[in-house]
Length: 156
Image 1 (spheres, rainbow, N blue to C red):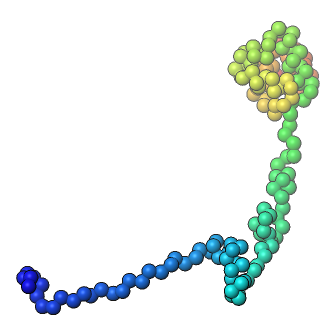
Image 2 (tube, rainbow, N blue to C red; image 1 turned 90 degrees about the horizontal axis):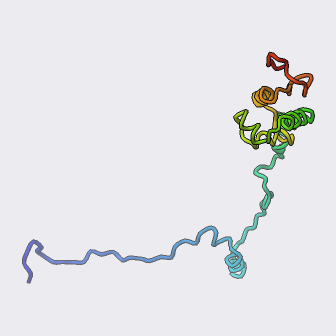
Image 3 (cartoon, helix red, strand yellow; image 1 turned 90 degrees about the vertical axis):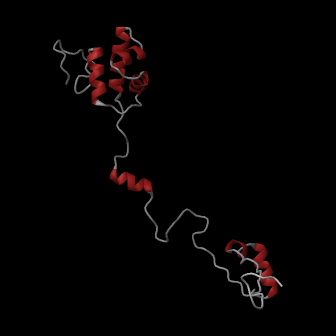
């Protein structure tokens, strides 16, 4: 008989261990296979059709489209460079014998900016127009667009 700290009768104090299956997940219960099996076995099956299924609507109340909201708060079209300003820039640049890149370098802008102004894609910025006026010595803002600047060099 072993001797040591334990004395008396030794008994096992174990409880039985029960292994169970994991509960099926909700996605597994919704599959076509699970629904068909439940129908065959006679279990109650509830089907509910979502009203906005497959659409991009998040609420039942119709919301105003984002475009309408933008149009009410912001102007519809962005102002672009006028045709007479575009022509005046191009005429003055060609008269001086400059390329678009050279004009851009003289006004400390990228060549793409000059190209956008001459093609009419740019939204006119007064600072850029003022730099072009000084470099080309041609009026580009206000009345008399395309007229040579006065000797004083003043704009407007």
